[in-house]
Structure formats: structure tokens, C-alpha cells
Length: 358
Image (cartoon, rainbow, N blue to C red; front, side):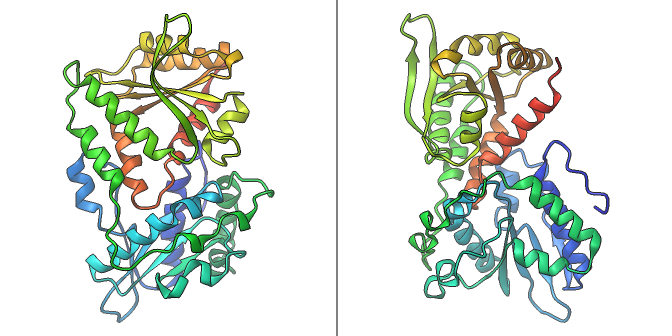
């Protein structure tokens, strides 16, 4: 990673590579990383669910330390997902008989006092924030440069963020409380549906449940089977971006002058085509602040659909993103671990905006 290139903002993999290199060069011990790159089934997810992102075994130590990496692109993500991240790492330590744990976060938490992070010592693990990482790489010019490039490319908040509004001590992790696996439960329901007409309604229902769960803090006023006033178009789901939200959706709201987001569920056996893209495009109306859509397509989209998405963006300024069933389930399962679900959507938007032609 000596010549770090952040291509299309695949930030999470870049941070993971950086962390591995930092640990290996620090001489802290033997590093073992968990490969999650090709997980596509529930069985594959279960096989690695209780493994840490990285395990570090110090010299002469009998037990390893479990390390989890959390890439947060908005400062509020740390507070929003702290409880899940804490619970998950505690479970990993317990089930794997680790000596301890380290939670690595890509934010600078210098304004957060220790009693907020560890109320009554309820969460006895180390937290490595951006300041701690800077100290660890000090003296290694390559790692210093890589860290600063990563940090500058990751955080999307501005300096007006008000930390006192978000108090961590309101969300302390409780010992003995089982991890809430709501995301996993929803993903299991989604994976249990069959492609095609038979289960289309169940698929749509589970997609709505998933979206409401993932974006419950950023989107509200949800409506299913919503018709336009001329009754010519029926949207599967529509939601309103909450005012003041600091997330992927607030970026979308500002950049695309939208207040509402259309969600479509396509339970097709084959990838969707340009026809489905053009149908969804008809639901979007920029003057009504409804210019963004997210399609859940069980098996993704074909090249014709991708061309239609680019054309819709280029010619009308409307944004349409497509998530596969596997990607949606991954977002759900990772949300149980304290990961921010919007990261994948931002990556997809980034890829589209940087590749669309004139």
C-alpha cells in the first residue's frame, strides 16, 4: 500500500489495507485478517460472523486481541452505531476467548471524554481513533501520508458539527444483554424468498422492512403503494428525507435538490433491463423535489439498464441507484455490527458520477 490510490472511493478496503500494514510494521505481533470479500450467502456470513476483522497475537502471548474497524463518513455515525459496535465486539471477544479488543474508528474523538465512552467501565476495550492512529504512524512517512490521504477522503461532515448534541452516555452497552440481530433476521427473511412472481409481494414487504430499519434515522413519512395524483404511476415505497439529517441522504438532498426518495423492489430471476429503469424514471419529478430512486433488484441490472441509468442522470439530472439482494443483506448484517449502511450507497453514487459521460 506504499503507493496508496483511492480509486472510486472504495474507502473501507483502503482503510482495511492500511490497518493491516500498520499492525504488521508496528511489530505488535502476528496479524491475521478475516476475508469477507466474497460473502454472498447466509451460510458464508454465519461462518465468519463471530470472527473479528483482524486478530493480533502479541509475542509470547497465549491469546489474541480482537480488532474491529469501523469506517464512519459522518461524525454522527459514531454515536448512532456505537451500541451495536460495542455489543458485537464484546460478543466476539467472549465467543472467541480473546484477551481483549480494539475498536478502530476513522474519526477524531478528542472531544469525547472517557466517561462517555466507558460509563461505569461497561465496555473495557481500547478505542483507536484518528488521533491514536496518527501517533502510531509517527516517524513512518509513508504510513503518515497514507493516513492523511485516507482521513481527508473519508470524512464528509463540515466543521459545524456540534458534538454536544450527540451524547454517547445516553447509549451505554449493557453487560449480559444479548446482541440485537434485527438486521440478520430481516436478511434471513429476504434470502428465504424465491425469485419470480410467486414471492414478489413477500419480497417487496421484506424490502420495505429492511429500508425502514436501515434508514430509520434519516428517512421518515414512509408510504407503500403510493400513487401519483393522476393515478398513472404507483411507487412501491416512498419516503421523505428528514430535515437536518447528516448522512448520505443529506448529501443527496442537497446535490439533487430532492426531498423525497422512491424505492422499488424487483424480485426478478434475471437482472433488470433498461425497461425497468425507464419505468422508475417516470416516477421521478424534479419540480416536486422527487428526483432520486433506489431500486432493490434481486439479481442486479444488465448493461442496458446501466446505460439507461447514466442517460437519465446525464439528460435529466435524476439519480437512480441499484442494490442487489446480496448487497442489501450485507448492509443489514453489517448494521448489527455497528457499520454504517450508507457507505455502500455513497460508493455507488461516487462510481456513477465519476463515470458518466457527456
